[in-house]
Image (cartoon, rainbow, N blue to C red; front, side, top):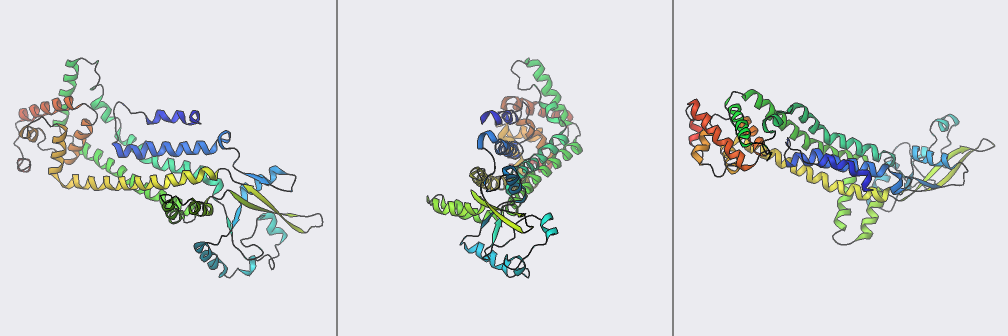
Length: 393
């Protein structure tokens, strides 16, 4: 099993130059890797067997499996309050009697085109069809693409700028004089007028962070629709786990991920009469699906919460200049405050963001040297310190 997902570990390896922060990495890399790993495991028959095993009186077993897989299996409605209410709403519709087997006589043309069971059994009990079962793997793969999309956009928009600025600065085999020369070039870069470039860089990154938050929420809603009110039911299921109430857990999860289902096939007999053949099907993958989706239930909530906190953090950073200065000071703690103020004078929020991204890709010692060189460049330029900088604590 590990062999099947081992190639994905290369995607989680840390790069020499990191263009994402920690939360972005969890969204772009970790979540995408988890979803792709689940997709591979569910698609591999050697680990969990066939996704569908049916018992039937028909000799054409392959036809039975293909029919039940394509047109879906169903379970009968349980004595559950929520499902009972749902059943009553369906029964109240105008076509209630139309689907009752005692009154419904299908036409030949209709059955050739729609060879499937009705919504109601002969006793009027609702049949809940498991339409999602064949779509689990495509949906997981689609979610992986959604989560990777902001990372892909940012990689394109970033254009390798951070790699150009920070490459080989942490290489211990690099001569000190070459490292010093690179730092001096980097200091001159920050004293030049790249405000428009840095602003586009900063706005693009914020847009990708907002996309991470939106995608987390959209994926939660998608699962809720895909699995028929999944979230509200799993809240009760997860609440039963701390109390070790496994009977309650099984009762709730069985409504969503049943292990046994029925499949009805309609065919014409030798005399032309429509016959109904009832089949019993085993759904082995639902043993894994219920664990996967409860993990995703918790994971998506955590991702949405972290992405929301990150957006709040960005707003604080944008509107609070003093906070930006204190965060920069924490990265260069041994540098005098007055020296640091002069080093970052005239820096916009986007310039500060670029400087903080550089600090996350080099050591504290090298970043301290960079700030000293930046201070020297500012001294050489001879520009006055803005009044706002002189008021910073």
